[in-house]
Length: 88
Image (cartoon, rainbow, N blue to C red):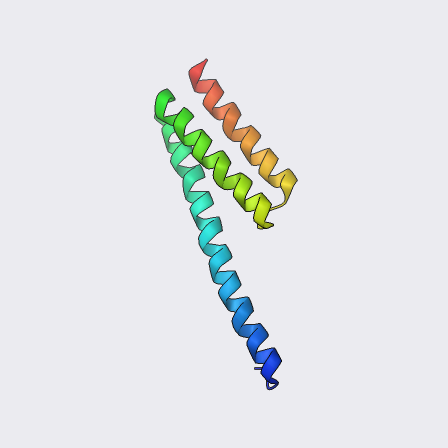
């Protein structure tokens, strides 16, 4: 454990930020899982609405630097393909 006052503060700040980021990433993953369940159930209307919500969460995660931009774009593309496959 850190002995210096500033190092102790950094540890506390890092722990708070990590907890906040974990909460945000967890919510993003939950939105994606909800969408995948709707796709599996072939619920087109709700899946399209959920797609917008999931994309918004992914965009926010990219904006905050929680995931890389390419990773976010890849996830959004794959989710859109899944939704389009059930509506076609």
